[in-house]
Image 1: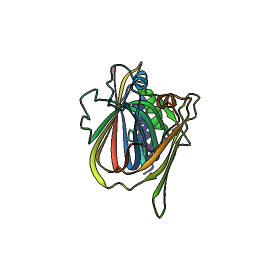
Image 2 (image 1 turned 90 degrees about the vertical axis):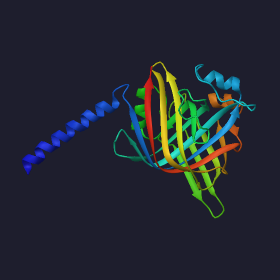
Image 3 (image 1 turned 180 degrees about the horizontal axis):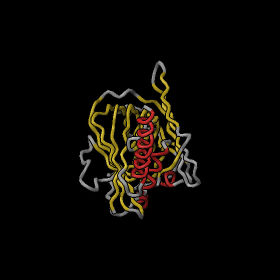
Image 4 (image 1 turned 30 degrees about the vertical axis):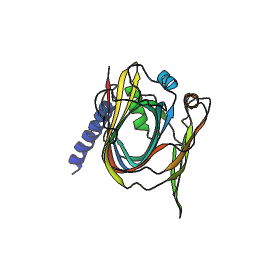
Length: 257
């Protein structure tokens, strides 16, 4: 028995070390499994001219008479597993500008969305590190907050994003959210571009439950890229909102030069 254990343990350690090296090799594929999640997504119009400055010219903005579309998303999951590592509870938060699909995927507006990433924050270290290696300007936020407080009348919602970096965009959400009940598949593509190339973060959810009646407001500093985009420091009750709940989702992160 001692001989068997003595052979197995070094083998497992060597295999784990090789897996970590493969996971973190620059340019390697990044896969993330999300389990038992709830989220809030808010969409609001912003001036097309200001949005255009923030998004590389090769991407086509979704624009209507009200302007381009700012997308605010935050999701909390009981399990976030990066490249088959042990899952941990975690939160992700990102801001973006809605796009027409750059690659022909996610074209149905009822079951998919494409966004250009302006900011991305998480309290899951392996996720932040993995995205940075791909070229995404992901930020660590150890104080990332996501709260749903049940009351007799409604569910109060509060979320706060404050990454610990000098140039970080800080923001928070507050309002009331409803329980999601409408099932749908969904594909969310978040795009990013840097000197390392184009990164696609594609999250596929086979079944997510939605509610569209939440009333949530957004707040940020005027002296930030988002404050400048809004021409102020808040969005009072998103004109379009999505409260979501899903048991599992898979995010594949790929990069092309």
